Length: 248
Image 1 (cartoon, one colour):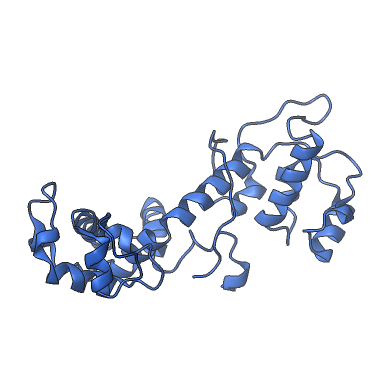
Image 2 (cartoon, rainbow, N blue to C red):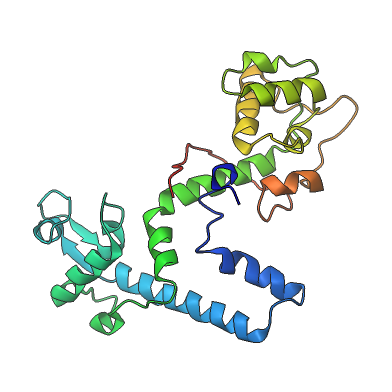
């Protein structure tokens, strides 16, 4: 797969491919119980690791003394929150946890017994924590496109006037003249980011709430558009798309 063309690259990662695809394979009869049990073990290990990270906290002064880039003050931060700090690595956070047993919170009575953190699912857990804010934003973007998949596009829209679209996208959209965002998303080469640009243009022009003349908006995301929306089904009521980080 060309990662530069992955439409939801934060959500569609190699480290979570088993969590995304194993249940689908099982539903199709292609995955056996042994592999399913392995996935359940990984997910349980990740939950154990998250419980440890959330159950440990130190003042910023102690985190700073351990080499982390935070202001040395009395503000408490959990180990989970420390992974949001630039250049903080899970191995370093774990070492700081092991060196400061007084950091275990009362809400986590098992404390040090959770160390060392499980090796199974370790990479996926670290990525989920580090990029949690971006993952949530991307999930909202997916939901927003699902919700507005049937937003109508006025005939003869001047796509060349949308500066964020590529030349290829302008040519394909102009030639096809899709009636809705759903139809635009079904055009090969039209990315979700392009759909956002079109949707924002429609919203600014006051056209995002209209449907084609004589027709009502359908709620289900049409089959040709599903490749843009992992797990898309009925339109959701989520909102609030924001830019996402692109570097994994």
